[in-house]
Length: 119
Image (cartoon, rainbow, N blue to C red; front, top):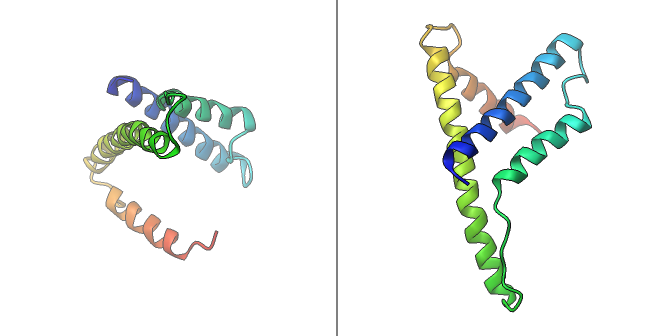
């Protein structure tokens, strides 16, 4: 899949996630988790990005694992790169308005929360 297409799908996933969070903020606790149909949409977007695994029928187990790892590794690298690009553009745009809370502040807070999260 071309990087342009991956980026479009990543932006779709980010947009859907933002809509869930915004809905949860306005509708109260429990409302922002995403409905099953919405989760299915995001799942489908991600599935479209991942390549079909084309493993020869006569491949040995280790060969099949190696091929799948290579194919998925390339796709995951593309996806992560697209998420990084989208986030960086959003963060730079946000921070250019000289906000009280910068993107780095938010990332630090999230890192601290992740460190203390027991789930």
